[in-house]
Length: 499
Image 1: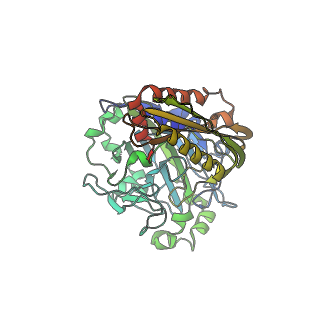
Image 2: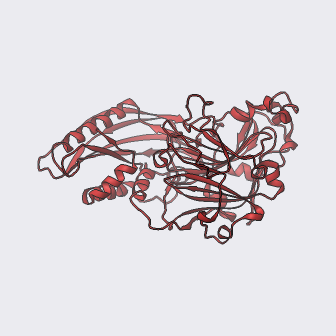
Image 3: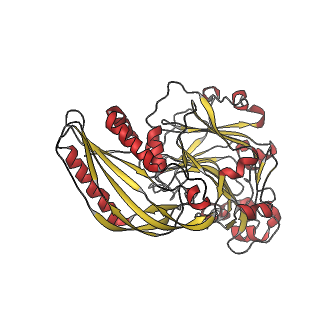
């Protein structure tokens, strides 16, 4: 998709210093315009009814007074249907790397039946990772922080953070850990979560995401660093963080294109399943759902009060992408042309076509259920086309030194879009397979660049169209053909494979 191309371009840039400058300010009255409201069924099976922005506004679940953002839950009605009304917000922009600073006055934590979280997540969960910054259930004391990934990522205790590792393997299917547990760091500091946090008027959570580590700090209201308050954050002077996720994990291979999420759900796969093990909560009702359904007044304090949310990037470099496009199933056809450039003089050609089926695959999981979006796939037929094109371009590249071959796999699909409004739209995802040899005719290296013709905003909101993503693809191609060292840099940062 388009975000992959933008990420690839961002990966070509290196920086000489580590200073941070503001990229996006989510504070004030523009806050809600920078998020989408998720209204589907809770992927974590919570007893919750996520409502749209209009309903949330009219029912008093959200508000903004210019200086603070309120996001609450229904606390006046006995719940029915799918559960108690709440909101789940996902940022319309995505980020790879950066510094996320949240100044929070109040959170929904510490209340029986609740499962609130402030987190980030990439597409096609868990393959692009998930970062849980604030999370907890029921009467929990102290914050739970975690990463969720596919296989191959784990963390170690380097002694440079104050929290305790409870599970070290970030793989959601790791053996010896609860399913979807991921790698978790807990803190016993009561002022980081729930009742004590709110009593102390909250504080600031700062999350730094680099290629080497993901680090989370918490500062109580009375101890916020001056450089954060002044808008010139410098993590090097912040002291010991709550957590630092590093060790046996190549961060750039497991985390990219993350959206920022706030949500408050109830019961479900975590809060509901541990209800009977919480003596404070289990004494209130036989089950979590029974308590949440019949005690609306208990949730008057289950709200977020955000003073500010800011995203900084190193030297102002934008690693930002637009959000993906949720959709239902679609029929698609794909064709594969091949073009060749480089040191060889022979002409090569290859072509194939086939029908493929795109299926809507909802992300789900014990952690936070992915991002609630659908993941587009094009089935075995399109996969076979990409595999055939890959073999073809690798064969071409291996026949000459310093040669590049590429094939573009394009599939066009008509999809039914759900989100803000509903409409039909056409999308054209394209995957370019690029194979190259090194200057001495060594092993063939293959990497992929993918673009999507329509963004989420274009499909659901009919906003002003962005530049055609094919322009970005052509830019990447030109860079590959004229700067071999950039191609190698792209290879390292886009998950290439050697054969």
